Structure formats: structure tokens, C-alpha cells
Image (cartoon, rainbow, N blue to C red; front, side, top):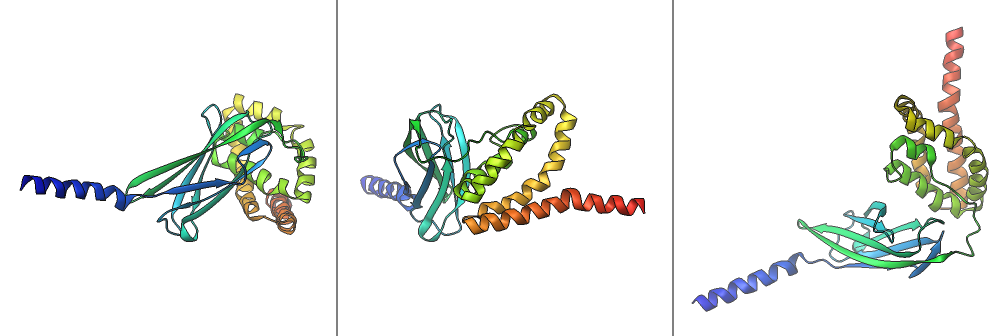
Length: 246
């Protein structure tokens, strides 16, 4: 009797992990990349449902997290994400970690890609630095707002000719004053809070650029945002001042 009971318990225990088991597959457009290359990640979560979420984490050769994103699963448990390895990124192995949760259990899968020491020869786009003011404002490059700005730059603007031309002109203007402002933010907390209050509405409007996946959309959304922010920061205050004077 005890032997039978033991076998029943053993079978029951062995079945439980299977019922909760989940397999994650991870694919990339290449296995080896150069600095400045765009990495396209796609995969599938077995038994995953459309609308569920998976967390993707990218770790550099030093084991530091350089990107964290939550992605919504598509049909059949599929997911997709792309990110750009910085031009100055350290050569070595980058780990792509995908985490999924089902029935209270977390399942993790890791895929390793390699960055060579050479830049991509096809990467002739204008050099870009960090988002200095936003980084100083929000305290870290890992802040969601800073990551969003970086992804818009790398995944939307720099993928089109008009966006690349805009970034080239913008960088010449932006980096002429942003280091001074960023340094002053670190020295003056009140000024830092004032800058945060000023740039938060603009950053919120820029989130629409995440949907600009073509030349026409980059132009259309870009012009619309320039007009919107121009009205928000200059037009409305000017109208208020004129009315007050009257």
C-alpha cells in the first residue's frame, strides 16, 4: 500500500512542473554585431497569450543592464524588439534575457550575441552623444524618459534620411549648450526641478515618434510636434502676455 501511495505522489509531483512549463525561443537578425548596429530580437513564448507581457533585459559585457523593456505578446505568443548597440559600446558578449510569468512561475531564457571591436561600415549616420539634459534631469541614463528619447533617436529618426539630417543639425545646436545646463543641474537642485517641469510636457509629446516607422511618418509627426511644442512653449505664453498687457 505504501509503495502504491509513493508512486502516486511521485507521479503527481512530476506532472506539476510540466503543467506550468513554458519554453521561450529567442532569435536575432545576426549573431555578431558591430558598434552602431541595430539588433532585431524576435521570439516566441510557448503557451503565451496575445496581450500578455514579457520583460526583455540587455546586459553588456560587464554584466550591467543597458536596456529593460516590457513587450506585449502577439498572436501565438510572439514578441519583437529592436535596439541599437552604441557606437562606443564595449566589445564582447551581450546577454539578451527574456522573462515570462505564467501561473505564478517566472521562466527565463538567455541568448548571447557578440559585439566586435569594429564599427559597422554601413553605419554612416551622424555621431550622437547622450541625452545630457534629460540624463541630468532624471538622474540616470536608465530612466524611462531617457531610454525613450534614445530609442526614438536610434530606432525612428536615424533610420530615415530626413531624420538623420535633422539629428545632424540638431546635434550641432544641442551640444553647444547642453553640457553647461547639465552641469548646472547637478549643482543646483532647484534649477534641476525647474528644468524637469519645463521638459516633461515636451518629452510626453515626443512619445508619438515611437510609431514613426517610415520616411513619411517621420516627416509628418516631426512637423506636427514642432508646431505643437512651438505653440505650447512660445505661442500660448505670448498670447497670455499680450492679453495681460491689454
